[in-house]
Image (cartoon, rainbow, N blue to C red):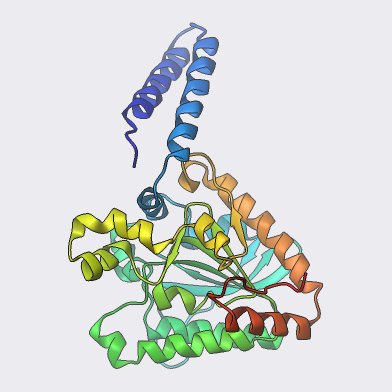
Length: 318
């Protein structure tokens, strides 16, 4: 990312001045306001100059709102359902019924973990066949109960371990995509951070696909593309640029429908606002989708994915 030494220096100075105000009777209100204004200006300048690789790093920020903490902050109620009913449960791909505003929905979301131990257990959000079979089960429940399905995507990709391959991870992903495309309820997917390969698409084949402003969505990671095409790890930023994986680029290609804005500096700088903005956006999208006849939604969904990658993706007859 662009050099942020000046920003860090200003942040440290602001902390120092606030501590001085708390410790004594000195009034530094004007100085604080001036420095805060200068800091905001520098952050905006930095934000405007970000490259695709900078966005990748923001999408991977360890403090980015995601997983269960984001769901709990965003939903008015959430009840987790576990198990794939075939003997396994995957903590990397979770879900259950929830209430968002006035809407009752089925939530699916990747969980990457907060602590090192939890991150290892969740494999940093890389789901196994058990996770995709569980998502399939929750989609079936949503279909029976007429609950719209919302998926929050944040994964580098499906887990590539030997056991996953032995248990047919590709087949589990294919079944999840197929079922999502045939659901008789409205569907929305949000790319929260990383949307990597089939592991993301498995729960993102929705009527509406949204992206957080600094999220990424790609068939392969920049590191993987650099290793395959350039055979040089130093080409990773170049690969990120070539992949066209950022939200503005994908909106231009009409592969997503809308961008959810983030606070200056990234979603991690204001998690509460991130949850509130995302909830408001989802409620607005749900209201619009739920007003449409089901036959029309299914027709548009079919056209959308039959024409994916064409010059114009017909997601709406207007």
